[in-house]
Length: 237
Image 1 (spheres, rainbow, N blue to C red):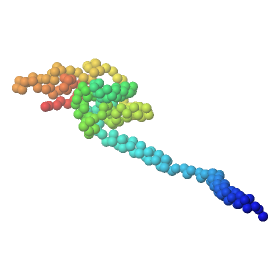
Image 2: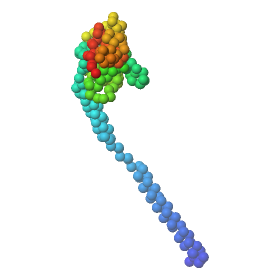
Image 3: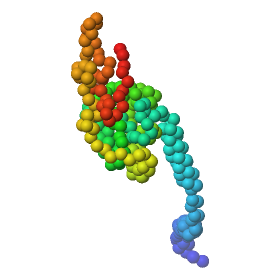
Image 4: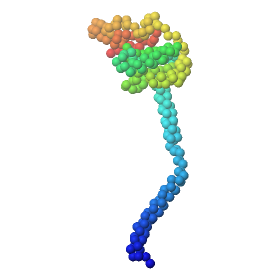
C-alpha cells in the first residue's frame, strides 16, 4: 500500500516520537504532583511549650536566690559595740585598689543622703575592723564595703544600689531614729584621735623590757574617738 521507503520512514518517525511523548507525559505527571504538593495547605506550627516552662524555672530560681540571700543575711551577727539604731559601714579610704575605693565612696555617698547616724569603720585606719568583719561574716576574705542597717547585714555595693533604687533602703533607714550629722568637737569628724599613752608613736617604754608596742591604739597610733563613737577594747601582746 505504501512504498517501501515511505513506510520505513514512517516507522522510524513513530519510533522516535513515541519516547518524547512518553517523556513529556511523564514530566507532566511529575509537574502535576509538584503543583498538588505546593497547593496543599501547610500545617500550622505547634506553639512550643518549653519557653513558659523555662520562664517559670527562672522565676523560681530568682525567688529562691533572693530568699536564700535574705536568710544568709539574717543569720549574720550584728557588729560588736553597736546598737540597732545606727548604720555601720565597713570601708577603706586607701586607693590601692581603685575599684574597691570607688565602691566604698559610692556607698558612703548614698548613706549620707539620709538623716541617720553612720558608724564608719575604716579598715585602712584600724586593722582591727577587718578582723572584726572576718568574725562577723565567718570568712577569710571580706568584701568591702559591707553595710549593716539596724544590726542587719544588707550586703555590699550592689545590694545597696539595688535597695536604694527600689526604695527598700529608705524604708529600712526610716525605722531608725533620725540624727543630724555634725562634726565632733573632739575629733572634728575624723572619728579618730591620737593615742594619749604613746602620743601616736605606738611605742611605750617600760623599765624592764624597754620599748614595747602600745596596747591602747592601732598600728597608726590612733584610737577611736571616745566622744562620738565607742572605744575599742585594749589588746595585749
